[in-house]
Length: 200
Image 1 (cartoon, rainbow, N blue to C red):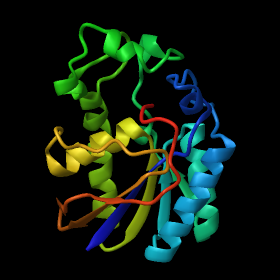
Image 2 (cartoon, helix red, strand yellow; image 1 turned 45 degrees about the vertical axis):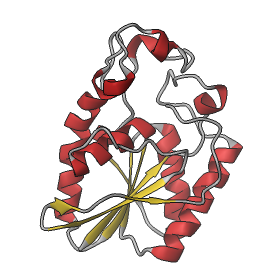
Image 3 (cartoon, rainbow, N blue to C red; image 1 turned 90 degrees about the vertical axis):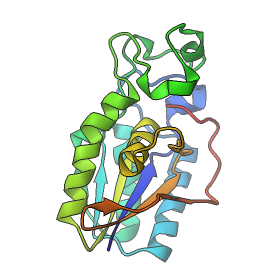
């Protein structure tokens, strides 16, 4: 049995301001670095991963670098684990989502901002990549550092269910066991440093 240890990046500058990030180059905050170190220590105490994989966006890659340093591992970048594109909403407040008449909270994964991606789109590109890593490391534990929207999409991919798909806090950890191409029920690891928000 293998394990996919999914980690959301530490608090970013955009998260702290409650604004959608407008650049892949936005870094994590001092709190985000503390969150990343705590996540690294929790992973080190409970698991024995062989690899750390990260979204290429700076906030995820910096989080992954902190985790990898604690585990004495290298970081491998994976482009399709990048954050959901918010298109025209980049740089705007999280609150603008609910002001969009096209947004339906009951089917939020289908909502697509102008010029951006829906979470269903994110699942379509990130889910197959999760499958590749699950096959490649069928009997191993690996860490995958990405973004809130990506982790929600990967939860839906593993379970086939959007209704209960979990959006983690910054540096929230979700563990998915897998065997012979089948995923187990995702497990949320609790007790992390609280973030200031739940979006982005």
